[in-house]
Length: 209
Image (cartoon, rainbow, N blue to C red; front, top):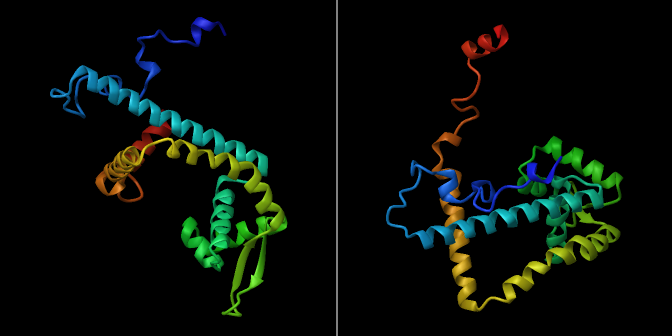
């Protein structure tokens, strides 16, 4: 493929898919009549920076999964168990399932896989002898800490370079954006199927086409 086929011009909206002028050119979603061009451009840069961070986080997560030969869900489970271990908390399969929002059967399947890979051990619960307590093996903990953990710790350096006032602004912005994006503000996300779900009529149409 030629280079001209893979690059966009400097002014192309495809260079920033999250810029409001690119995604909402007719102001159908956002009334920006009172927003100056300079502010619009800065907000566009902010949205692009957030997108770049998401892309980086996805790339790091994928690299970690490949390195550890584990799924993203397995990695989340190990992280939860490691943090619990650091705090001296005892974690049961039920607690892990609640954290990951998994059914008991799915948790059991995951734990069997992690135990077979020598990533976790199941011990008798120190208080409830009928239950299991989960722990990350020392080998997996050390490997995770010296690779992904050390890399993720670089986030702290970015936060440390900000002043306390700048950190408060960032915290307020991120919390506000999380609230704005919450699915509690999205009626279309309620239920198991939306308006795009196949109805008997559309299913018949698809079969006949």
